[in-house]
Length: 201
Image: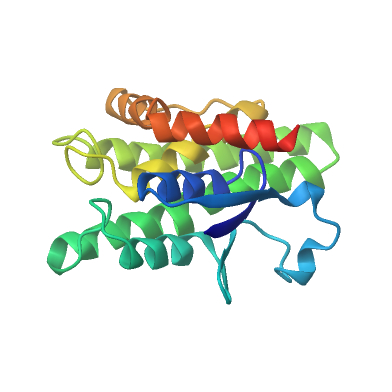
């Protein structure tokens, strides 16, 4: 059984969903209930996955590790389809995720209200540019991976929930909105949200 260290609503939600999609049993631990989480991950970040004697960090790396280890339809095993799927995962993890992280940083670090709002608006403009990029990638398919959801779709559906915490306008196109809704309504996505909420109470 795996152990997943998570924070409610954080990017670790995507890791948990993928574990469920793979049919894997997992013990989840809310890092807010861990006295010295930095002894587990010195950076203090989630997700952290424990697989027997292995401690794995960094969301994208954990995803690829799990998808390579267990049979699945979320990540092709060879060829151009695999390369595209990994590219989509890295876009989600290394481009979209940091764009949203700027909103959290600005909110926490800038005290002047006018300067804060201006910085938040600028960050939101960049996020909207990235969502427009996603919309263009969905012109001929329901999901980034085609007609079935991919790992990147799951990751993006988690990040899409974060805009609600800030006084900014995040705009998604019609196809992007449909993709996000489809992923968030997946049984394993709904199950994860319920499980993490129950564990954190």
